Length: 184
Image 1 (spheres, helix red, strand yellow):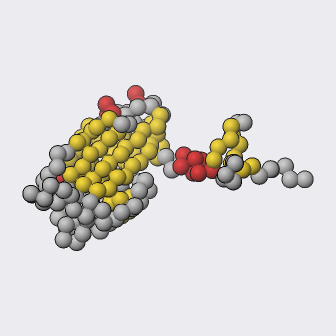
Image 2: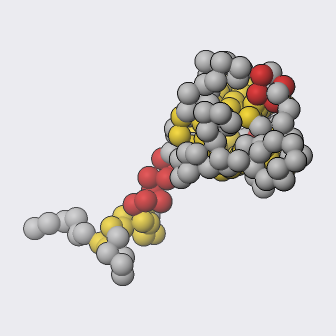
Image 3: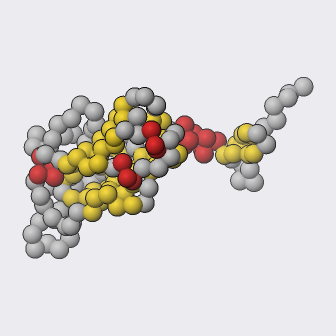
C-alpha cells in the first residue's frame, strides 16, 4: 500500500504538505534559494547568476574588478537598454548586525531598493566613476529581521542629447556589479 499520495492542484501542479499546509513545489524551491546570513560571521552576497533575472557578462577592461561578485545584466533581455535583477536573503535578528555595506558599480546609472526603500537613485547620466570606482554605502538602516529583498535596476545611457537609453552592445557596454557585506 502506497502511504504517500500524490497531491496536485487544480491546474495539475504538484503540492507538498508541510504541517497541514499545502505548498506548491516551486515556492519551496524559491525558498531554498534565499541566502541566509549566518550569526557570528561575515556574509558576502555578490551579483552572479544566482540573482533573479541575472546573467553574467564579460567585464570590460575599464570596469572595476572584484573577486566576490560578477558583472551581470538582465537575463530576460541581455542586450536591452535596462536590466532588473534581485536577490532575497534572510537575517535572523537585525539587532545582531554589526555592519552592513553595499558596494555598487553600474555602467551607466541605476536604482537600488532594499525592502522597497530607495538606497541609490541616480539621475540619468554617464558618470565613469560609477563603473571605474564604484561606491560603498552603509545599508544597516535598510535591513530588517527575517526576509530582505534587494532590487537593482541598471540603465545604459544613450549619450548626451539622445533623450533615451540605448541597448547594451560592444560599442555601448552596460553592466551591474553589487556586493553586500553583512557582519554579524
